[in-house]
Length: 105
Image (tube, rainbow, N blue to C red; front, top):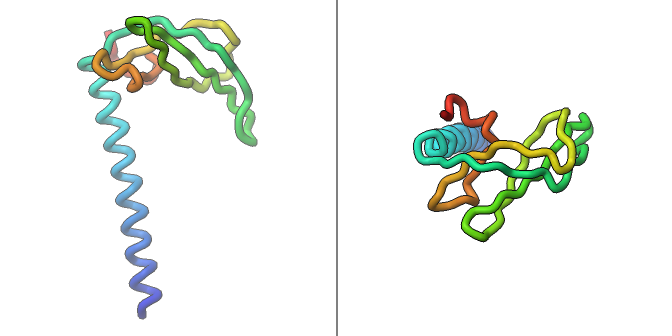
């Protein structure tokens, strides 16, 4: 009986965590849509990650003399390529490659 209750709460906790992460991610994207600014970033490293060979590019951009980083997965990335990035002016650490921010002007 105790084992069934523990499994029940484990599943509820896991589902709750997944829902929380989905809602939080959508909230961040919506915040970027409404309050974000666009800038140009450059890939400083591009490498294959994971067992499926996903190509991940790590980008860097500058805002008011400070540098910020992010990453973007796409099979056609090359080192030193550029990409448009949307960031929050009050916290540029919150940024996303423009293709992930649907309907951004």
